[in-house]
Length: 449
Image 1 (spheres, rainbow, N blue to C red):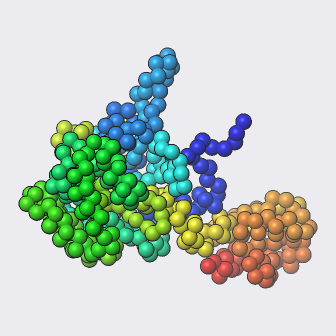
Image 2: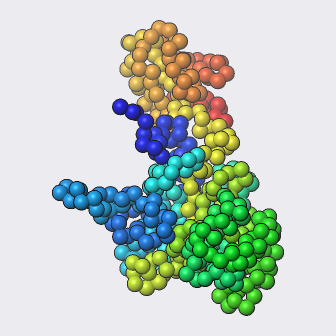
Image 3: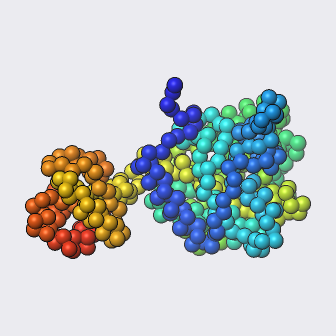
């Protein structure tokens, strides 16, 4: 029997869990600093809640749950693991509309599941770190979202990311001006969303395979081919205005983008923004601005989002303006691990002090000392086996990356002392047993990086 977890899922050993908790703690602190409140929803939803919200490709990736008991043999599904955190949020807003504030800002850090093909940085079970603002159409919402995710990445020591920004209605206008039929827009968006992955030639082949006229495909791709991903936002906005001039909805959407860029300029996101007319984002519920985080030499993005003013209305019967952004925890951790971006303290492990006793008669004092050290807010482990030699306990402490060891022996007991050993420098000193806890706490803080 294989002991490996299912393909696309992982076990997280202690060091990995600490790294994940570090990232989630930073995300949580930043999100709360922007006034977002926590929310949790069930791991699975009624299947009709999820189906039809993610477009043709998204629907194929939903993990369905078969009916239970006597209905199992039917092969029918009535539940499904959540695909993202946005649709469950829309359901919650509709369900609790009378209990939530008019402007509801929430963050949510929970796992989601997709029946995708696993690859590097892509899993079937993974965490998302979402922020969403419900109830306002103001571009201040988009600007705050972009500032918040920029703050998160800055705190995590990312220094070379850019925020790709586009607008669904501007993209629709671009397709219409290029001559792509409205009934083919969904197919065109699916293909265009792959431009950075398969290039213009690959997109052109896919557009034609989906039945889009060659002239329309060529006109569309000519615009994209002449667009520089490094161009200043003002330059790209001018190019968009020139291409869709006379298209009322398109010009209004470009105006929305200009407002967002202008507001973001006074935040940490300001110099990160790039207008990317090819950005489509595959989820069909987006209605306005769409955004994505790009990092050099990384296949895929660190996160993305956009405005979805119609999604809540699918549950509520009336439209409610909404906008959100999702950071991909797994991708962030993969990049940070590969590029040694985690603080040194995280690698030190979960224990500040190891208490070792040289003889079984000292067990009780070891337990007592450990309790006193925990009273000093230290993380303490007792090496459970009393031996007159320190080799085993020292080797174990080194494997656990413990910085300090407190040693209780018969000689120390007779003198009323404790030996304190710095396991990084191998220097040691004797301290009074009576004041040992405070003295060891000072020593631990001295060796912290």
